[in-house]
Length: 175
Image (cartoon, rainbow, N blue to C red; front, top):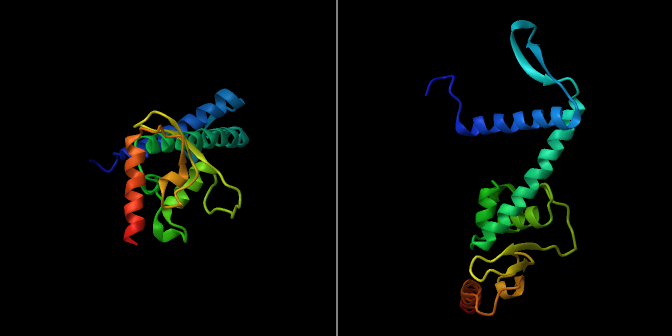
């Protein structure tokens, strides 16, 4: 790798930024203009003639990204991934927050809240399709130990749910 190569992550960030700029132009009527960098004519950067169009496009991208996070989190739950695993994928580090990161991930997905969270007394749910029984599941939260108390909608013959409930009961008995 030479010093001019960029990482795949940096390349992806640039692609997302380009999509936002294109949306600002196509949807909100902005125009891309080349502006000299530090007064040099030979070196330019692309900017929008209307930065508010850029804000509108970035907000649109934020809403789309938030919807995708929720959709993928629901898919992850459906194939048996734990909220803690989802928290890791979201980049939540336990040392950053007082609450367990599984709870933070649930709140981020179900409540669609940015970090840090405001306290809320309302009960919110996440919905996902179980990869084992195929049913649409209403997930109250990861806060209770027993999945039977949190997940509503599994088929009576769902092997995954039965195994999780049995493991939860064994854990409770061992305490």
